[in-house]
Length: 395
Image (tube, rainbow, N blue to C red):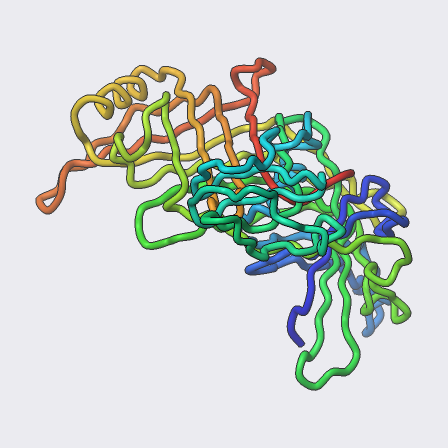
């Protein structure tokens, strides 16, 4: 059997059952190691050849999910890792205008209030706004292109901007995995993991041929359900009144991404690698007398490393900051001009270790340093993120 579909929804009550009106997201994954585990113990009794009947502990989920960082998935990821957004607003107040020159990646709102238009081919708009009357809902027409005199637009649900700030309350997720034999048909198998919280958000920039960004999220959870445990199990997609939203794999391209250290781009700094992990330090403890677990959130910390070639100017200044353990302001912007989606991550206060220099006979000398930041209760050590996406998220 193979994975056919992965569904997820925010489940603050941790029941595993969505109510009518709940938004359920069909999410793209590149890997999955989620599993259900249950300890078993058999006592050997003195004087008896056979042991007693087995005793079983709590059944609970663990593992990780691997996913591409996409414009559709990003709001879910950041909500799960950082908490509910502190604000959600329209990405732009710009509306379509006649006889206007537009560049690739420009985003304007359509007058119908449902859609945004993302410029795919630069050009000048015509005399009348593109007619979208054939698309009566926000997701109708998504990805289709419309010609507007010499400009070409892609239709998208109205773009929203989410702002996140690290907090102590992470909403739990329920994730259902559907497996089946796509060729032969037959019965499907379901596994449902309830009360999941994402433990980490890895952010990595590296040189090389990688063109899209991917990440892995370790999780802690509380309960497990599905066809193995419950033969009469029904998929959450069959519950009346829920809304299934299919998430596209509209990945961010590395060639449209920028990282800056204290306002200087990593290209100018000649960095080869920069990686940090935002870690919530989750822990899970079994509850007595129930098939559940209590998931706690620990102190937030951000740790990683950077390396690059030695050079004059900006790099020397960076190395001196690292050597003196001065605070660095790190920002990462990931973009996708064709979809109009983006992520901006801000680590306002990061401190580096004394840099290590390695010399070589075949290339310029390189430096490397560890970086770290901990939440100390001040705004300077709070992680922020801004996400532009077409997907409406709600808890």
